[in-house]
Image (cartoon, rainbow, N blue to C red; front, side, top):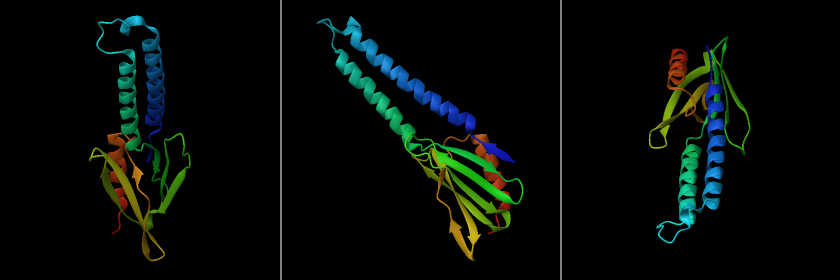
Amino acid sequence: MKIDNQRNTYRIWISRLVMAIVFTLAIIVILFLPWFEGEDVRISKYHLIIAIALVYIIINLVNYLKVPYFVSYSDQGEMIVLRYYQMSLFTSRKHSIEIPKKQFVKFELQDFLFGTQQKIILYQNFRKKVAKYPPISLSAVDKADRKKIIDSLSGYMTG
C-alpha cells in the first residue's frame, strides 16, 4: 500500500498564498478608499487594518502550530518506508525512515494542539535495543489515509 498527502500539501500552499494575497489587497483597499475618513465614523481605517492584521497573524499562528508535513507511506516489499518533510519556508530538509518489517516494534500516536492533531512515533529493533524515531505530524494527512496507515502499521507490530 502506498499513501501520500501531496494533494493536501498543494492545497495548504495555495491557501497560504491566497490568504496572503487577500490580506494584502484588503489593506490596500482600506488605505485608499475614503469610507473611513468621515468624522462620524467610529473606527478609523488604521484600527481596521490592525484588526485584520491580528486575524491574519492568529490564523497563521494556528497553522504554524499544526506543523503540517508532507508524508509518503509505503509498506510494499520488505520495508516500511515513511518519507516526510515539514511544509515551511525555512526548513526543507527531507527525511526518510526505512524499517525492515521484521524489525518494526510498534508505533504511538501523540496528541498535540489541544488534542485536535496527532503525531506518530515509530519504534524499531536496532542492535538489540528499541530505537525511537522523532514524531511526525499527521495534521496534513486525511483521516481516511491516517486510518489506513495506522491499520497497516498495526499489522506489522511485533511487541
